Amino acid sequence: MSTNSPPTLLKLAMQSLLRDEDLAMGAVGDLPGELFPPVYMEAFTRGLTELLKAMVPLWPFPYLPPGALMSMRRPQTSDTEVDIAEVEKKILQAVLDVLDV
Picture 1 (cartoon, rainbow, N blue to C red):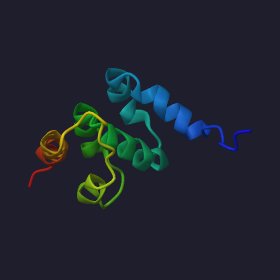
Picture 2: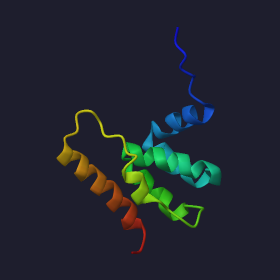
Picture 3: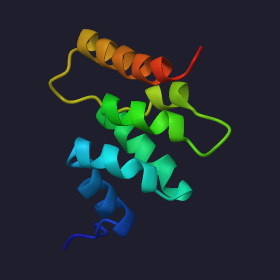
Picture 4: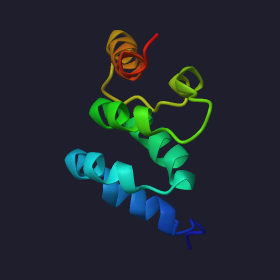
């Protein structure tokens, strides 16, 4: 008998939203502030760079933690170390491109 809990409503909503990156980019302006962090983290871990670019200018909080999220990203099982480093670089660069640094 399995003791796994079913996914939360928030997790199901994020999965549905992030299934279509174009849809998510259109909806990001309407996201309530409290949903930004979990959606941002999920987009970051999935490597959805265009969605991240759309979210960064709308970020409703004074602090944006892209560096801390790098270690949280779940690499795909077929990724090699070189591929993982390139993907992480691409994700971080996408976020930094939107910021004027």
